[in-house]
Length: 362
Ligand code: F6P
Image 1 (cartoon, protein in one colour):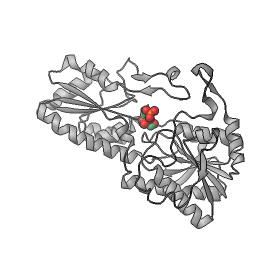
Image 2 (cartoon, protein in one colour):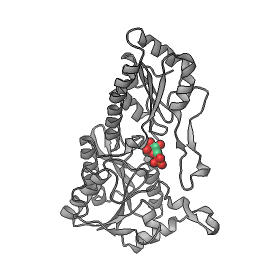
Image 3 (cartoon, rainbow, N blue to C red):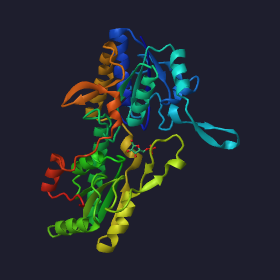
Image 4 (cartoon, protein in one colour):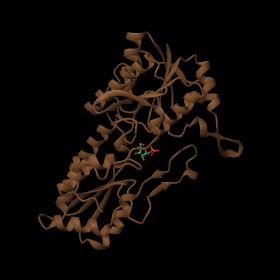
């Protein structure tokens, strides 16, 4: 078979490990040929962005961050940004161009590696007759089709490391350190990162916070130690009765299906300042959370996903993605991944964190 493969949406550690596993198994076991489509769906709309992807191309990329194919989180064929005369940009539905390019490239199937946006587009293209399978990635871990996406474990490790570093300086100066973390509308990164980094307070988009509750938690903790604290806050977290902190709105983000969040840490710092004597500092970890070499866990998960997706191709399970369910590799309908997954604020993890004295600001 001749299979196209693309990486779409925000990058994350492990994308290259998927490509390596896919090509290694595909060539060795099935004799497949691979076509690497560059820059996500841009490579299915624009000419000259699709090239053969060989065993040689994926040699030595297991531990490499980013993606050797390039990616884009604004190249949506259904809302493709086209620059018109006078520099004006308009959005056009170029999905038929993507379908035509798929046929021109003589593809027998397409492997889409991405998060909710990329996989939703894959599903829609599937409805137009393309044979698509998906591999779930995102540091946010917010895809409903799988228990875990690769990229998440590496990001949590980075957060834990950053919080270890912030702890020593927080303690030395008796300061409150607020760490703003990614994850969009889901708090998985903040919950696990906060737990791994020993945060005193964890603020999630799923649980709007009250400033008084946070102040009470901090003051209770300071009865037993120097007045320093670490607060992990999601970029999507917001005060009760308030709204999320938005950096850029949709009208300023042509082709993007989501707003760009950012600034929740600063908002919290301003709200806390009148109530605390301790100095407050804000660190935004930002894209550091998406970079670097994948963790051992993500290398394994990404490799298994890359190899496993060929089972779906072999079995004709088009319009499905590979996933992890209850610790086992499995598959699920691509249509399912369109639902965003959220932290269960009444679940075991939050309950036990509370029992350890972590405040959730509610
Ligand atoms: O979905 C992954 C993610 O890193 C989110 O956590 C974050 O909100 C967003 O992408 C950032 O996107 P961009 O790379 O466009 O700044």
